[in-house]
Length: 355
Ligand SMILES: [Mn+2]
Image (cartoon, rainbow, N blue to C red; front, side, top):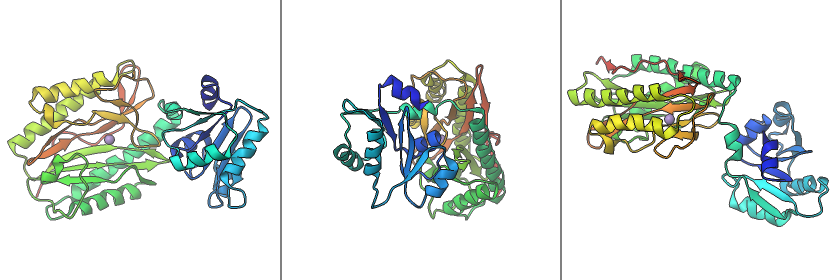
């Protein structure tokens, strides 16, 4: 609750500027504007493109900002209504408020103390409600549908961009509102770059093809990765693939409420290191997902946070060998008391696409 943040940080009011936090707190999906919240006022300031939408989506008092009644004048009026002559403490989101906006607010508003709230509002989003979990599961299901379709379409000669376009088309056809991030398709030597940008490269027989994609459903993101081989896999491809798979399955087994993110990361990392590929797994094992694609807490060597029931995590170990190629396998799961519920149902045994 935002009220807890106001209390804990002894704030008279706070402004929320992160678009995902705005949505989470107010219901407004437009992403443009600012929220002002105190114990007596809940105000959503946005411009005429969004005022009608904001009134429909949010129970906040919507105030239109325009050149005659600019944002900082409206905020000034909100502060005046609090009737506090001095010592006004205002919280702000230092992780999202632009410096240029902050400078103008500091100049315009009678605030005595500006208090950065860091990730306090983001933290409210860590534990998902049943409703949020159902949207996340649905978004991931759409990814599964797109993957099933792409397996029938993949063939040598297609460019990475065409594969990405097909995945996105299939997700939209299956009900996706949007994409969680730019779809990654990396084939052959490109697959050793974890976040390669799909390009004009044509798929060739013998390529690893890594596809990392996701969509949004009712604002909630999905995220999954599968790597397949076009044609028959070589022994080395099988060795790398099966090492990543072993690490991924072991990490999935290790997830449950009460363990740290770093302990889960270690399970996967140890397996990859023992196989001799420790230097080829540079990124963390996973991240949380919600309205935004990369949320806290993370599964990484630095992940001190204890996992809790209702948190979402991706589990995505990888091995990337420059000059050879790479593999990543990623599922998205919900943490439970004794384990996790895997929202990703696509097969994970190495798939060799007939050519
Ligand atoms: Mn991911």
